[in-house]
Image (cartoon, rainbow, N blue to C red; front, side, top):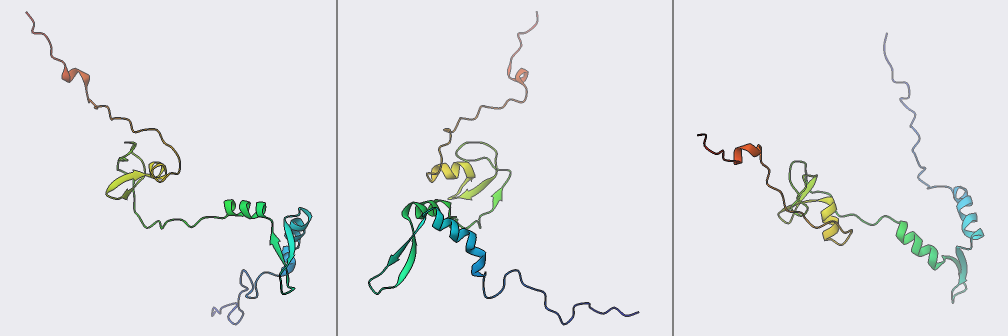
Length: 136
């Protein structure tokens, strides 16, 4: 018994056709833009007509659009203490310091974090540090 490939000469369909998405797929979106008055029709000096998104909608799109992120080529360290908050967290080596993501955002102006707290000395056993009075 020989095994032959089933779809040897047939090409599998792609996720999106090379011609792009058909315009009919946008009909609900375009109707919503028109019904909510989010677009206006303008005519330039040459007589060409076009549609422009209103300013409020443009601002909202700016806030929703993903901003380009910084490259994430830095290594993440699990066993280091953050140089800013002194917590043992996931850190990245930035400018010679191990900094957690929360503190990195705070330093770049993202969000405010609590000020670093000094580390308390850790004693393995409190009785070792005490001296006993000699017995009589």
